[in-house]
Length: 159
Image 1 (cartoon, helix red, strand yellow):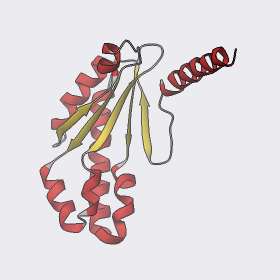
Image 2 (cartoon, one colour; image 1 turned 90 degrees about the vertical axis):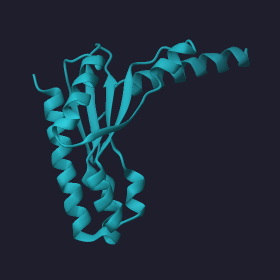
Image 3 (cartoon, one colour; image 1 turned 90 degrees about the horizontal axis):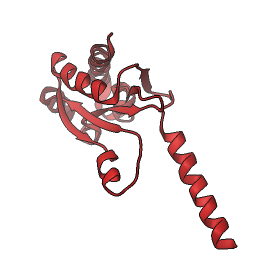
C-alpha cells in the first residue's frame, strides 16, 4: 500500500507542476503579455521583430520537442536570447561580470487554451546587480535595452 500511495502522490505532484507551469505569472522585474496568438505564430513574429529593432536572435532553446520524444507531453515553450554586438562590447567595457546575463531572453509559453504568452525580464532588472561596478553608464545601457525589448514585444504582439 505505501508504494501505491507514493505513486499516487508522485502523479499528483507532476499534474500540479504541469498545471502551474502552463502560465507565467507577473513578478518583479518581468513584463508579461498574454496574446490570442498560437505559440508558433508568436515565435515567428518575435523572431521577425528582433532585427527590426536593431537586435539579433542569438539563441533559442525549449524542452518541448525533446520531452515529446521521451513520451512526455508538456505545453510548448521557447526561450529566445536576444542581443547585439555593440551592446556586448559596451557592457564589457563597464562590467565583465555583467556579460554573464547576455543574451537577455524572451520566453514564449503556450497557455492551456492554445494561445501564447510573451514574457521577459527587463534588461534594467537583469543588469541591476552590476550597477555598482558599471555605474550610470551601465544603467543607461540597460534602460536603452528596456526600450528595445518593449518595442520588440510590441511588434511581436501587435494585432
